[in-house]
Length: 90
Image (cartoon, rainbow, N blue to C red; front, side, top):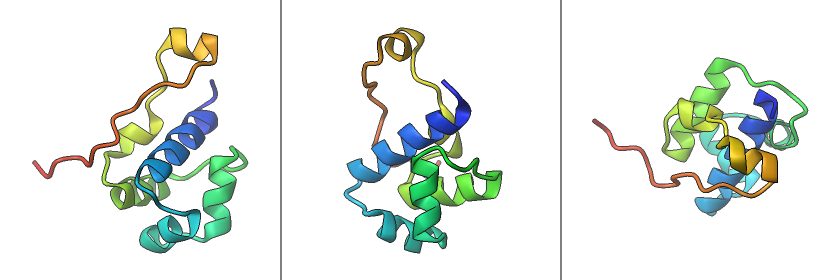
């Protein structure tokens, strides 16, 4: 799975788990809504600053947005579960 696809999958999964529309996430992250849509469709590769802003807006670490699914799940095409709880402020 390409890194753009990983970001797209994780971004969409976390956004939906938070009950956010693309528009609301875009507003919180100070990013254009159409850019969120393009990221979720793997059209663009996001810069590190954008990944950080998205992660903060979703209450997770930036690494969570880039974490690849387990190999067996990726091969089988099954959906993986990612931890959608907000990151702690340690």
